[in-house]
Length: 163
Image (tube, rainbow, N blue to C red; front, side, top):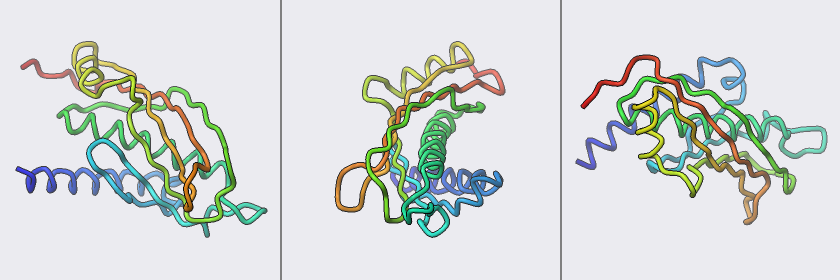
């Protein structure tokens, strides 16, 4: 069963990366999926295409990578539940803690006060649901460069099948 899950995850990640590549702003970021464990999604991008005038990561790039990681996380969970939905960022609150002088890595996970099962149940029942995601960009030596709390809305494209 783990092999089936691994194959399904690999296919889902290929679709996710293809989706990112199809969005010109995301494609320009040269991002890639770094890690996916079913609960946490990490995206990476090279500093060389995100450097600002001070030699560190551009704040807009940090925000964009965190937004895309959180969006990807919600999208993967919706797809894993067998649903077809549009996922939109509803709002976000970001804090820039320290400059990042290394490649960018954004990690996203569901807020600890929420559950995927509740989110999916609401999406099935109402055709729409909201999820709050915590995202961080860690510093290479420990600590956090940027952190955020992002809220996403998912709206079913097709009605959920009962069952």
